[in-house]
Image 1: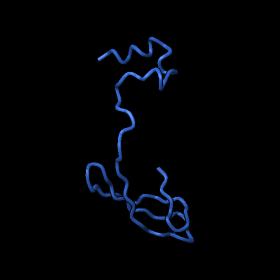
Image 2 (image 1 turned 180 degrees about the horizontal axis):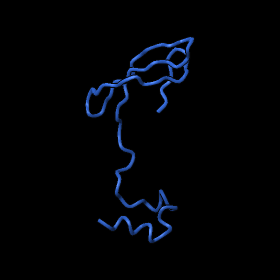
Image 3 (image 1 turned 45 degrees about the vertical axis):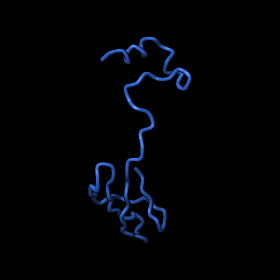
Image 4 (image 1 turned 90 degrees about the vertical axis):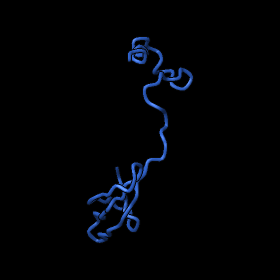
Length: 78
């Protein structure tokens, strides 16, 4: 995951982090640009799932995944 510095837009490193909730972490970051070196706090959080896992692909949305019957059989195994 790339977090950029809000001042100079250089890459940063995450020095440490702290759990705020099950969906949110507080990241303590430091800019890797020696001329900047800004230290700041950022938050990262879960927003939403795009597609629940374990479901059969929709042939209309993902036809390339539904071409091979052997590949589709893995969704029937439980």
